[in-house]
Length: 43
Image 1 (spheres, rainbow, N blue to C red):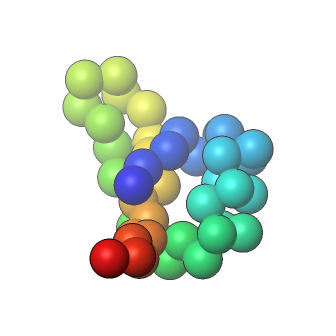
Image 2: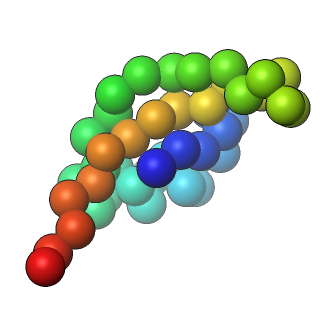
């Protein structure tokens, strides 16, 4: 899951729901920096 680094609302939701930060990447289509998270899904 990704979100823009300046979207604090979405970052808070992801991290509150146990999202695990992996890295920051550059979206080459928009030239915006994104945060990349992993989330665990239930079966």
